[in-house]
Image (cartoon, rainbow, N blue to C red; front, side):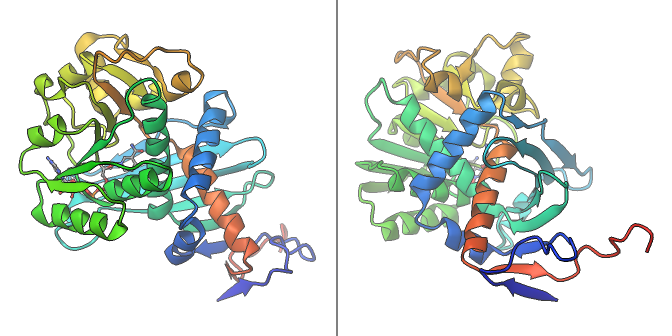
Length: 355
Ligand SMILES: NC(=O)c1ccc[n+]([C@@H]2O[C@H](COP(=O)([O-])OP(=O)(O)OC[C@H]3O[C@@H](n4cnc5c(N)ncnc54)[C@H](O)[C@@H]3O)[C@@H](O)[C@H]2O)c1
């Protein structure tokens, strides 16, 4: 049914002109990305810059929700990248928070890559690792850009200690960040303990504290990473942010709009981020305008906006399908280069127009 593509064989079988179709499982994805954090961060940052200057097509994500399973959703993120990468595709990612108590990760995903010229899908990749990697890469990149003109944070606080928190820490550590103190807060004691164990094993140093109160975590961190699975704002006390930390609001729905309105707000993409009841979307609904958004991360990169130090600095990244595509194509190319691509024989069948 499947066969491994030897290095010498072309991905398109030219004699019969039948497009190939590959399946790339999670172990190959992990192998292709492990230890390449700096490269992935560069790729993600470059793709994000290209997106910000018109080098992509990235329509709004589509949310499939279920009346009988209100906490669950599956999101479709279609996208197309131009330029050197030239690939189209779709990430299809589920979030089922009730998986976690049952011992399964919350999120699962596949990424389909489509050929630029024919439109044919040519690969299906396990994509929870790709998604976590691109999210962590952009978060780590943002941490650098946002703290460029202020004291580099030395105390990190992870609010929500699941898979995304782990990937963000890994990317921060692999791209030059070290912390004197790392705080952890999670409403689930097992998650907090699991994350603490990961931090200890990672050997990146710094004093680790598991906090029993959210307030303590925030007050004792100058880089706060929100990565919870909460659907509605639950942090609303502005005084917790009196020390004006840099906040990576990756889970997007933790902060009450009032906190955003008192902060400097940076997003990845305004049109994407002010949707789907994210905290920035709620702030827009509350005020009737978008004036509270200072700009995008790209505006920060090209120094189009000033970032005052006298207010909390909140980055809310919606997450863009183009970033998944770029990382997915990189993984595909790496696996193809290694000669270990698993092709599904006869995936496309009956290709002669008249039989
Ligand atoms: N913006 C992006 O690009 C992007 C990309 C991927 C994931 N995410 C988001 O990141 C978040 C985390 O994803 P994950 O895969 O790590 O999920 P996860 O389920 O593995 O971890 C979430 C953690 O949050 C904890 N938690 C839940 N409610 C909490 C609360 N009130 N206070 C503190 N902790 C709480 C849970 O116990 C769990 O340990 C999700 O909301 C996901 O949608 C965002």
